[in-house]
Image (cartoon, rainbow, N blue to C red):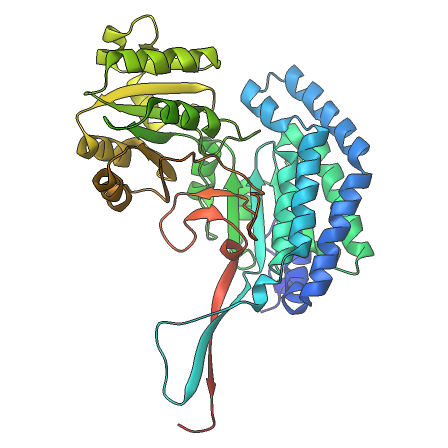
Amino acid sequence: MAIDDYTDLPKSTLPVVQSAYRASLELAIAKGVDRARGIQCMAAALDNALEEILEANTLDLEMSREMAVPDLILDWLKLTPERLQAAIQILQRLGRLSDPTLRVMNVPYQLDCSQTYCQLMPLGVIALIYEAFPELGAIAAGMCLKTGNSLILRGGSEASHSNTVIHQTLQLALENAGLPAGCVEILHADGGSSIQDLLTQDRHINLAIPYGRPSLIKQAIGLATVPVLKSAMGNCYLYWSESGDLDLVRSIAIDSHASEPDPVNAIEKILVSRHLKSTSLVRLFNNLQEQGFELRGNDSLVGEFPDQLTLADEEEWGTAFLDKIIAFKGADGLDDAIAFMNRYSSGHADCLVTESYAESRQFARRIDSALVYINTSPRFSRNPPGGDSVFLGMSNQKGDRRGLVGLETLTTLKQVVQGGRRF
């Protein structure tokens, strides 16, 4: 059945979904070189529109402050020339990468007299529902175009002017590159279309990605009938083993918070071995406080270190602070720490600092997290140096899309069996 036969969408949503769906059909057969040229055009257009985007963002910030928008969202919302240039550099890098839809992979079986393999292919239409982070729409547009998908943006009302200017800039660039404008569509928060309207269009939308506070993720999962890629931010744990190095713990904790504006893998909870010396803990507390961190702890640690720690609420162990706050708790050993992490952490990035190889192997095998970091910082970067990886975020859901959200995350597999005319 053609998309035109479906008339159950709200009037504000229907043209957007139609346009994105039709564009996805064209992108699925478009040459990689043409899609790469479109990404480079988007990068150049954003660079040329830098001042206009910053002016729109200033208006968003002024209106958000008048509406008493939380400081966290204001931090996510505020664009700088450096943040925009970082997004432009990601687009430029995406434009230079090889076409991921030409990549083939082995399959775990082989049929007689046939060549059997898997090929990556586009998903179709992807929807991004996001709070603030205006530049994230441009990064997602580049990743979707690179993988042959069309994109529907649905940002929050706090970033409406910024999102509008960025979207218009991207659309004009795509048209100049000879690609359909529907490659990147937008639904405005104040345009009469709800998040539910978008997340229930499973006939046409192949994946939805909510990005923002845990409350937004929970809302999207509860409303959606389309497949949802569950993203995660904050509430990562670190266990400081008795043999672990103090300087390494301090460096990891500070560095994990250094990725701006969204420290996705920030260490917010540290479990400490009860065998560690009090002097080592005090040194860590003092170092972190000098770096501007607020420190909290459980009953026993607060009782032991009342000058450094304030009491953490019980529910805080399972929720993200999304701020420069770290809570501490004692652990009887690695088994105790792993059990506590598996119960309370967000499950997308957890850490261990130890000098014991046996502990590192046990932690890697038993911790229930998408990514495990041992004696290294989990700091998140969308555009890490080296390699051919660009990342939109992190996912803590189980399945084939768990972990870092890269280009392959936005594709699916097609299994091909090519025979030799004999069977």
